[in-house]
Length: 196
Image 1: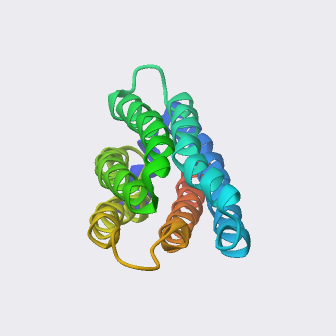
Image 2 (image 1 turned 30 degrees about the vertical axis):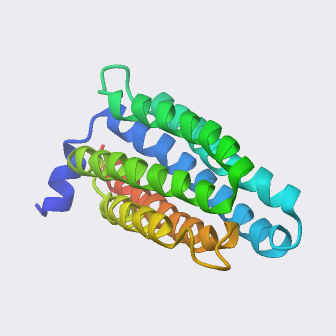
């Protein structure tokens, strides 16, 4: 028996349901990020009002998506990292709103700090879920990359020509990693259900 089949056999019904729920959530998160990148690229550069709304919406969406992440997990699962993430994302939404009144560099600094903190949480969750569900390497890499990107946003915040379009690449990579993880969870689900 291969290690893939052994791990599939050890997946509980709760784990398979969690994998299915997370897969749907990851596809949704990827779709949101893709739409956000398109809107930023097409509209935000020339329209300050749209750029402001998009700047605020991104961390707000993360808080909502994290709530859905909590709902995807079995009742007994430790959800403290997700609760912390929600608090950080709500605080970031408020922080970006206030920072935008001072300027784009300040908003990029707040966004960068958020990317570092939520990247760390994503890294931790990926490591935990890897043992239960497998297929979490893209989330682990994404969490580490988010931390690095956050540091870059802070470092580059005061450079000329920095704005919301700076964040488009970050969101695009996020969409890419969510898609890879969702497809990887498909494999986990398929193998687990085939061996039941």
